[in-house]
Amino acid sequence: MRLAQLLLAEQVGVQPSYYTCPPDLPLMMREADAAVLIGDAALRANLSEGPKFGLEVHDLGAMWKKWTGLPFVFAVWAARRDYLEREPVVTRKVHEAFLSSRDLSLDEVGKVAEQAARWEAFDQAVLERYFTTLDFRFGAAQLKAVAEFARRVGPTTGFSADVNVDLLTP
Image (cartoon, rainbow, N blue to C red):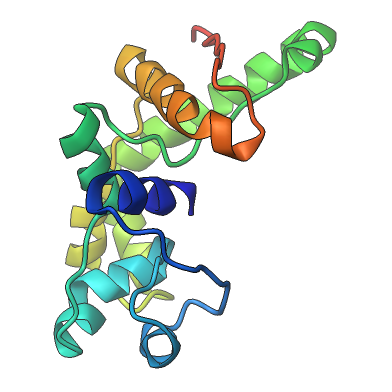
């Protein structure tokens, strides 16, 4: 939500009122002039519901990249330093498991998409394209992006505008 608020305020020049509701685009648009969606609901809005209802759909990550030149980091797996110091073996094992899972899933993205299509509202081809479009890296550009986002939202969120992130090496 903070990304949408930041982009709307700084790039579009509006500061709308926000409220929370279930991620049902047609229902949301009965009550509001715009909606912020994530995950499957956002994918549905982009692929079908947005065009069906004549709505303009924007990718917040693409808007951020156009504005800052940096990728947007939507999710990370993180551990506090004190936990890493107490449980270095567990932390490393979980880190390695995440990396192995990511690598296997990308190597077998067709199988992953086929399985996911069984319970999702999207077919295998759409899911495979979506999964291969996502960027699962977390390196220098992503660290810079996290720091830039924190710098921009820190003063209005109560969080530190000066973020210090250290990466585990595989």
